[in-house]
Length: 428
Image 1 (cartoon, rainbow, N blue to C red):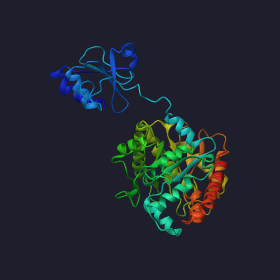
Image 2 (cartoon, one colour):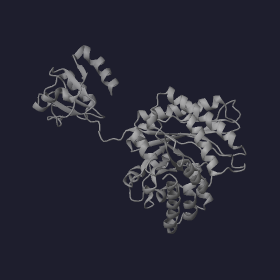
Image 3 (cartoon, rainbow, N blue to C red):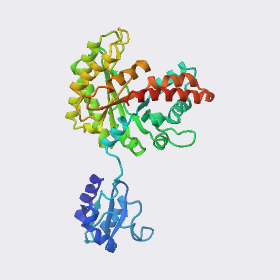
Image 4 (cartoon, rainbow, N blue to C red):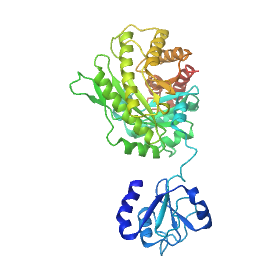
């Protein structure tokens, strides 16, 4: 908007004598209240004000930015209620105020991040891509379709009492734009149910050339415009997942993925959305606990170095890392050992300014990750809130029981709620 104002000013000022000034409404409150100045509605967080009889140059400017041209036949003959922008008293001068419509009840990024990770609740990940979700439906005996994917996500979101354990739900783009059977959009329904709606914004991974199979996450192109759309439709937070594999990670692959995460996080905060920063070290393989710790330390160190360089406000993010565990094909470690190893890595790499850490399950069994979380939560020295951001660990039972049959919805929702309560109890 500011650039547009400057463009019009440069175009018309030399020939028509138009001036534009940014000002707060309180500076001209007396003139607004007296009617000396009139306020007109324009798109965005702005008002425009000028005198009640604007000049031709002023009228032309207003015609470009107002829905209707003020004054004259067919235009707005009486201004909107005096609450906005102004012109001092020069008939060819417009004062622009961009502060009068700013909502004062919008939570800060830090407040939203605290809500997402505190209060004994966690985050439900229901953001599988169309391809992944379709494959899981087929495995459960449900023919894959947009309707089936919507019905399954509606089953999850509308489980009675879900908000007692879940603070936010991560949705895929398809679901974010769909409606429930009652006509509500998923983001609107989530908020009405006491759950913050979030959106997965990365577009998946692709191999990094020359890096032995290491992956880079894509989706930065056009991300700003997509975030603006998601914010307008009610998104409170977003998620971007970077993937690291123990055999292929190097300082370079850690750095480039960290850089992408930082650019994403900065863009989120620019649009008033809390970024979930997810650097996942995969637990597939037979590596031992020490290898997992080493790789997780490298990944987190690189991510926070890039976040710092990008100027990201750490009080307004949520970190979503893996637990430090042996590979799934290796001998398992006890929950106490996993919690101790995880805390040691986090203590050395994650600044205390980060309000909360929501762990991913990474393919581990529900009971195991809940036990990991409970042991970590019991460590008194940790400066961050810790909670869960599980997907499969919470929803797999519900999908299996539902199997596409509406008769099974209550039983499927009960299984989901039981798993969510178990995870939430591990944080309390």
